[in-house]
Length: 129
Image (cartoon, rainbow, N blue to C red; front, side, top):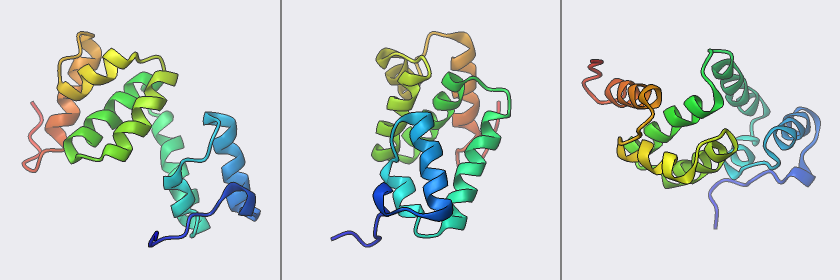
């Protein structure tokens, strides 16, 4: 039994429906993480707004997903790894790329540097090389 009710797309109304429609247009579905957060329309708005601001930061979709894959790997979030592997593929990463990013062995020098930076930045000591 779930501890948090998920707001199904067909049950959404108002602002939640607008946000869901945007998600469906962007990625083709409404992932469960957003369905859970949708119990608070304001929280869903903030979460999706943070993602939008991140995309304005100048990283490509593949770079953004590489960051999210590293964070998900470090924190052991299998749900997040699955989600960001899927989105990463849509952003141009291959399955081999996503596995290499997770292992810290990506051959692409730019993605490798980014992955190392993120890995260092999120460690408890937070030492950036």
